[in-house]
Figure 1 (tube, protein in one colour):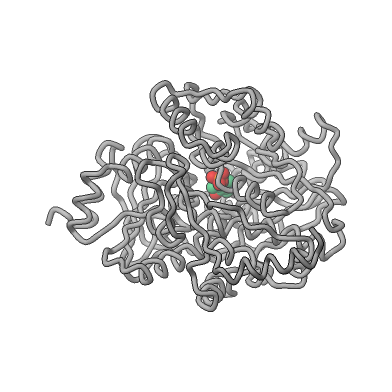
Figure 2 (spheres, rainbow, N blue to C red; figure 1 turned 90 degrees about the horizontal axis):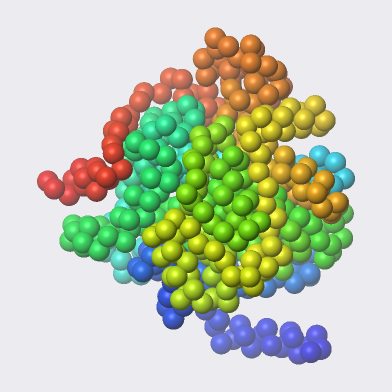
Length: 520
Ligand SMILES: *Cc1c(COP(=O)(O)O)cnc(C)c1O
């Protein structure tokens, strides 16, 4: 097709008012609007919403975006997915989410060049210092817009299971947002001290926080069961409320994450670190598979990403899965120094599998039923080959993670947090095993100040931190690194504890009913 025709086609395409619809990974006949997908969070039959088509960006779009700021890039990426949002309103939403009140760096997601091959994209300049802010600063706006534009008369109750960072980012995003309540469950032994303090000191009229006995998978499984519990949802409806999700199962969480991959690529184009169309790899420290899935969508939109390198910690179920095609949860669960990646059931993998098997909902229902009933499932040969052509998987244990922090500091005078360090270790392993020297972006998912004890242990030594409390450790890290302590973390020392509920996973419904005063 010649260029003129293509332009003409695009024009016609626009004239017939192209609208994006969403289907479910477990029901591919479903066709719902974006606003409903975001409001609902998860599909009724337990599947995840996926866009009917993936919009494409061309070389000239990327070149044009190279000169834009983050907000304009975001508009360009988000608008073809969010066709029911009025463009003027979407611009306002983006401005409100990615402004200087919320992010401490004007580039929002800056890319740092460590050497000619390796770049780090810092995704932690938002209010809670982890990458979850990239999506959770905008999701409440998308959600409330959806509520007020779809004759919804119910109060939205955001139910969150967190491995540490989502909880705080969601609380910050939704606090005192009209027409919403937010309830966050975190595993009592599964989050870092700072992460826990960030949540239990949360202020706001509409916020509720509780600790669940057990690990993140217990918490996430409990929350997912509530989303699909018909009778409990009916009770809620009778009281004028409706559940939604701020976890990365919500499409409104995933779609903003695509933006920063596009943004990173256009930054590299702008600085002539990549030629237009030149391929590069991305390394993603992975837990629930949301972040790396966003990179997969970016690739499908046309960003020339070659390999998606999936980095796991000692809970390396994904590494094994990518190597063998067998997803097997019947294994020990480890608590690690990268707690936001301590996950055995990576929910968003379901969306990738849906694409790999040619969008066959029947196949997804079979695999997920097997997972539920036996704790494992196995891909067919064809799907496995597809998986391996897209992903490369590796993992780092605790010692390797600390070593990666030390090595990065020694080599580049740059300090990374333990999650990012898992990624760095796996990147080195990937290069060594494959000999691939293409340029690579490692996404940095948290500020090192969120995990100051382990970072300091890596760059100094154990004795250096002994006898210091968490806040003394923060100060020691600041003086060792020459970086400033993020103000919101230092303040934690003086904030009152406002949330003290602890429960067994089996009692979630009761606790929710108490929070929402359903029985009263
Ligand atoms: C949530 C989180 C991850 C894992 O991201 P997924 O999207 O769940 O794969 C990695 N690092 C940090 C710091 C996180 O908060």
